[in-house]
Length: 137
Image 1 (cartoon, rainbow, N blue to C red):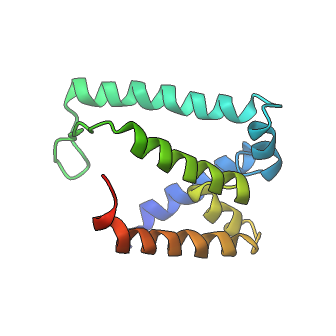
Image 2: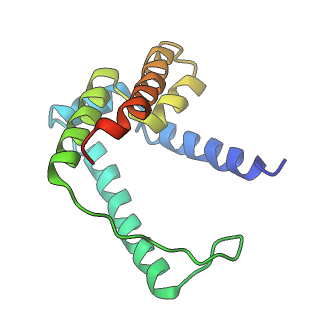
């Protein structure tokens, strides 16, 4: 019962992305062919809102629901790491027509073929876990 709030947020998020056509393979295809602004507008809006909210959280020293201060740890930028990771992520997104979050929304909408992508993503995560200590970070 304590996870009920997360289930509700997930359902609302799934409905929102479905209604906004963000999970549509055709919208993603248009984006990768630079034929439509729709997906760039959604992603860009999310980035801008995220930046604003993070700044508000940092400056107001807000606390979590459990009373802990929300802290943002600085990350060390590594261009090759993000370039390689972003390329792999983008290729997977282009090949399947879905990034990780919407894969589960597609499954919830009855597109069972996405199970192949979900299983592949879980397998890829497992392989990464096995090889993580040997990879450059």
